Image (cartoon, rainbow, N blue to C red; front, side, top):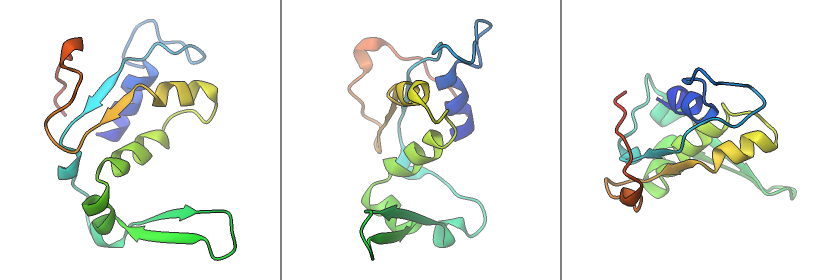
Length: 115
């Protein structure tokens, strides 16, 4: 799912795709709290945050992170697939992730994509 989202953010699904131009679309992800991992990744996968200070490495399993902040799992997976430059940061701002079914973007009339 996240690889398809990253491709839509980059604009690879369009005939006018150019690598150095942001031609991607905005993406709204709902129900990210129902994300599924394959194998034992749900218990074994570690997410790390480092503050920059000695002893500042914090690790958290996917199981704990989905209880605390479920949208972070999808955001980090998609961000890792985008370019690592200003263009990638601009594309990342077009991603909106929500844990429930409600989102504040109904006025933009979003179209549903099935994965």
